[in-house]
Length: 98
Image 1 (spheres, one colour):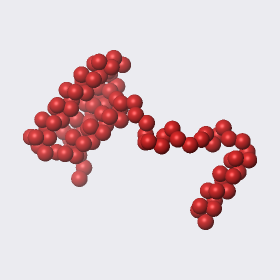
Image 2: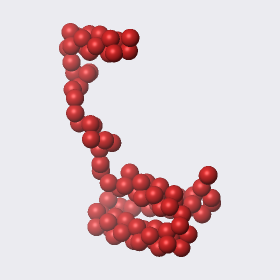
Image 3: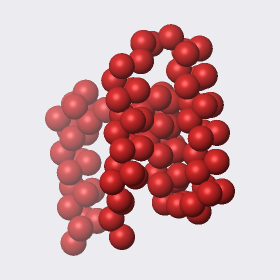
């Protein structure tokens, strides 16, 4: 099911606010809280859970400085490794594939 025009307008509104808002954290938090309230009210009226869920995910993705996943900062920097270590990693990966 594709989003209807009003859904797209809602997403556009979030994106517009993101591009226009200053980096004042207080104003951003106030705006986020207002939009969350608006989303909850919309959910009770229309039961459009997809719009609400996607909007919340969009807001979190844009405004919250979160790592992509819990493994984002784990591991080692392959580009900073020496040639011997790089070759060993490549050999290990080839073994996993075969």
